[in-house]
Image (cartoon, rainbow, N blue to C red):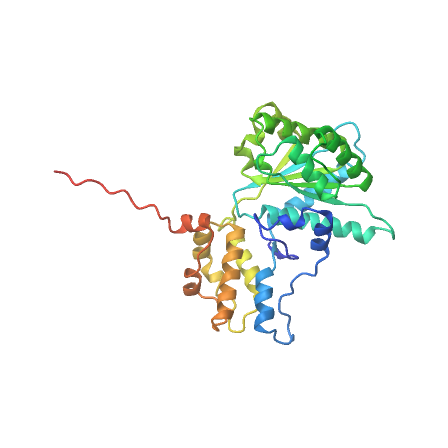
Length: 342
């Protein structure tokens, strides 16, 4: 079942603001946007526009699976010393909720630590790092250093940065390391191979559980060659694919639509009208969670701005989505014309 969850950042594109510990802590502790409550005084148009701009996320099957497996692996590796702990890889097409799932689990871990922590406990439970484009061992090491504010200069060698990172992360008690955009790592290039080796070395020197997320990782170069086999041999895979219209007797995509509709704050929207559009919405978004959330949020904002205060299929059809979704729904490539016979 798809159940409501705390809000999260949009998938693929809005994550740069949480790549330092202070920013991640602010994100984790930020009060979630609140759906309208029974008996609550009506909110102003400005307040409702701001609410739909943030909006809520939903606790999807991918988030549930990731949360469960992260908890298990963190316990499993709690006293493991000799080798790297087992890890997880979250994979799937673009705009299917990978980053949202990653950040949701990171937030949960951070808040759980905060609740248990004694006064004066300044440990860092979670680190969130983006793999930079064309990553090298040194640029990747620098991203890990930047998260905890470790000073890095251009004259420092990769080994020096690595020593500082391993010492600081161990001292800070980092228990969960989230690495996003792992598909940017290309072990087939010399610099990419060095970065992959560096990351493997890091997992053996830091006593934390590592979780990776990336676009179609199994089809990328990340799993290729000897280095890819080493990663694949240590990591379990969670597929964060598009939601199917039907799964046995359930309709997970319709459940997701219903959860999003229940969170809307529109004065004239007809409850149940969006789930009835499930076939159209599935075709429109190819079942991608990110595309669906964006479509409904944009439609809600348009409905407030134009005064209609409800979402209809007519309104949804006027909204341009991300290029990936638009090309799926109404491709611009013209049909091939056959030459007439002479």
